[in-house]
Image (cartoon, rainbow, N blue to C red; front, side, top):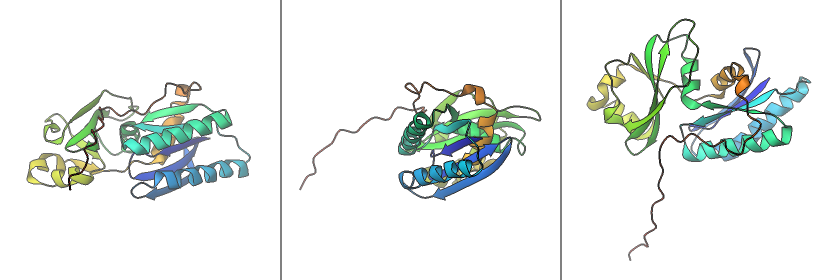
Length: 225
């Protein structure tokens, strides 16, 4: 059994994979819910394993790209749980999990997209073909008006916030015609983690979220009255 959690988007989800099947799943969606929902979901997952008289083999976590706060909450929680249970952590890039969920649906070149901030998105390219495994690609970071490429057959991800408005405008029409709306989910994360069990880490000191972009703190300016 592998317990996985994904807090990389507005969705907070926890799932358990057992030999290629999902035997437990919890999910909630909404702004800033991770700190409220994640711990109860994980507690339920551990109780489920205990009821089955099974011990989890590992924990898996979506390490990003994605929500700045969500990734921090998810990784900090999983690290604490891993230390308490003496389990390894399998870090899974968020776009790998998105691609894994579409592996039997798409063919050709696919570009995973995750909103960053302002008019910027993270993206990573995957090749979909029968029998292909999902391999972690190079990650990129760009304004969304530079996202289109004639060599890409499909775009996929969660079009939200400003990117949603842009992709449905005339400027984003080339991408909209090829876009597949998919949400981050611990179900795909857990199933993918089963194929990467050898990547589990016991030394978690250097395991950090994959932000893929620089976030700069703004200097505080006193208000004018």
